[in-house]
Length: 268
Ligand SMILES: C[S@@+](CC[C@H](N)C(=O)[O-])C[C@H]1O[C@@H](n2cnc3c(N)ncnc32)[C@H](O)[C@@H]1O
Image (tube, rainbow, N blue to C red; front, side, top):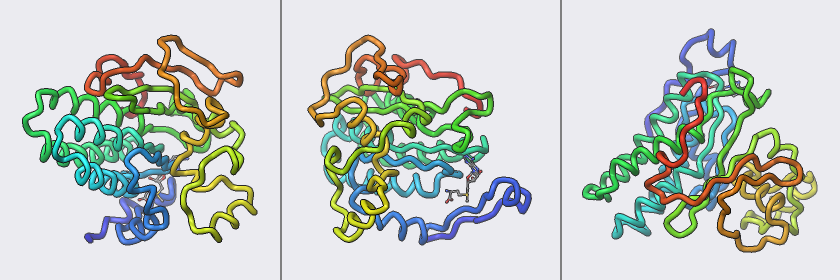
């Protein structure tokens, strides 16, 4: 496991606390939620993601599972590798780090994709879809003020695979964090060790909140009874507290980049 260069300059450490984490520590920490890192659609959000040391490793683990399960079908591999990518989110203050993070994630996805789907007629469209997902999911902004450099709210898209199509629903980070944390009996708990679950409940923290933040809020805000999701309507929808900003029509996975025009964001 090669070490990363942990520091770019003393100035950046002083100004932004920029110290990168080595793969050994990254892996040891991810092993604490190993099951989640190996679930293709578990959602991870890293609020100070740097150039992606954690997110890159999460994607590697998810893609290894996609490869094991779907390498015999290019169509399935495309769909599920995009689903894996779509579940990874980051916020980073510095534009060069955010851009590098997207680049690294794309490279890993593309290598895995190319190995299995060399002959896909959808290859170009899938690569565009992957770029588009990364543009939306890895945001250059301030995780503390929850705004971009130009003062716009940080908005995350939740992607759900329904058949061969993706559903997109946009949430502001601010709205997500204001939403009531889910109660233990509303959310199916991951299989964390029992002692860890009990400690977490005593502290009144949602379990593995980073790994399924959007999942959990979606369940409580949109789906209090934990029912099967309805197919998305073509109309924009807002929940009673305005947390869901916009919902998009279902889109074939390879068409994402064309049917959802990217929003202009600084640092992209
Ligand atoms: C300690 S480094 C960690 C980077 C990465 N998570 C890793 O472990 O390699 C912290 C990162 O957070 C970024 N950062 C600092 N303040 C931030 C803020 N308010 N919002 C988002 N990112 C921030 C820095 O630019 C830096 O890249």
